[in-house]
Image 1 (cartoon, rainbow, N blue to C red):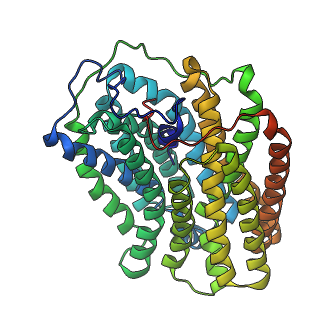
Image 2 (image 1 turned 90 degrees about the vertical axis):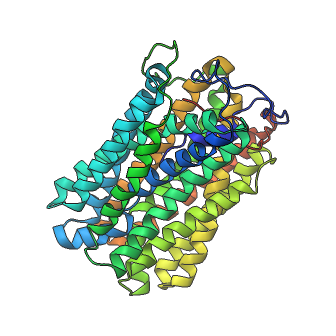
Length: 436
C-alpha cells in the first residue's frame, strides 16, 4: 500500500498558493519541455500501472480463508504472511525512491513490475505456506520500489504540468487499487474456475501493458547521488510527529485488520461462504476512506484528526458489537464509520506532519512517517492472529477493536490538550506530487 502519493496532496507550505503554473522541480524534468497532448496517454497509462500494481498486492485478501483450509494454518499465520509483505516493503520504499532519482525511473520500475509478476506466479502455483510467504515478500519489494517512482512519473508526465491533477489521480489510483484487488479476487474466486490461480493470471496479463508503458518512459537521470534514506525527525516538530504519527498508526492498524481477517469475520457473521462478500466489505471501507479525504480539502489538519479519531473509535466499537450480536448489518455500518474515521485521521495526520517539516528535510520526515504507517498496517494485526488461536476469531477482533478504540480516545484527549499550542494547518487541494 504506497503512501508517498498522499504527501503530494498535502505537502505544500503555502496551501492557498496556486502552484499549477509553476515549472516542474523534478530532477528529471528541470530542462525539458512538458509533453504535449500526444503525451496524455502516457500520463493515464502511468496511473494504470499504479492501479494494477496495487490491485495485485491485495488480491490475496479474500483468498486467505481458502488458503487456511488448503494448507491447514491458523489466523496467526495469515497475519504473519501479511506482515512479511510490510517488512519487505519498508526498506524497498526507502531505497528505491532516491535510486530512481539517480538512475532514472525506468531502470527501477521495470524490475519492480517483473518482481510483481513473479509474486503472482508464486501465488498461482503455491503448494504450501512457504510459497505464500515468498510471494508476499516479492509483492512488498515490488510495490515499495514502484510507488515513489510512479508517483513522480505522474507529475512529470501530466501534459499541462497540472500537479494538482497529478496528485489527485495518484491518490484515487492508489486507493482504487486497494479496493479493486479484494473485489476482483473475490469475484473470480467465487464465480470462475481455478479460484486460487485465475486472479493472479489476470493480474499478470494486466501487468503487460503496465510494463509497456514503463518501457516508453524517458530514461533520464539526475545528477543526484544515490543514497538510502535515514529516517529522522527534527526536534522542533517531534510533538506534532508523535501525535499525528500515532493517529495514523492507529488508522492503518484498522486497514491491516480489514485486509487480513475481516473477510473471514464477514463469513463467520453472515454464515455465507461467498468470497465476494468478504472482499466487498474491505472495498467498502476503502471507498469510504477515499470519499472522506476527497471532501475534506480545505479543513484544518488538526480538526480532521479531532473528527476522524472518534469516528474511527466508534466504528471499532460497532465492529465489536457486530460480532457479539452476529449482525452483518451492524458490521457494514461499522465498516462505513471506520472508513470515514480512517480517512480523516490519516489525512489530518499526514498534513500536519508534512507541513510542519522543514523544507530542507521534508523527504526525511515523510520517509519516517511512511515507516510508522506501514508498521501500523503490519504489526498490530499480528496480535489479533495470536488471540485468534487462543480465543477464536470473533473474540480476537473484539479485543483488538476495543484496545484500538481506547487508544484513539487517548490520542484524541492528548490532541485536545495541546491543540492551543499548535497553529491550525489547513489541507490544501492536491498541489505537489512527491517525487521521492
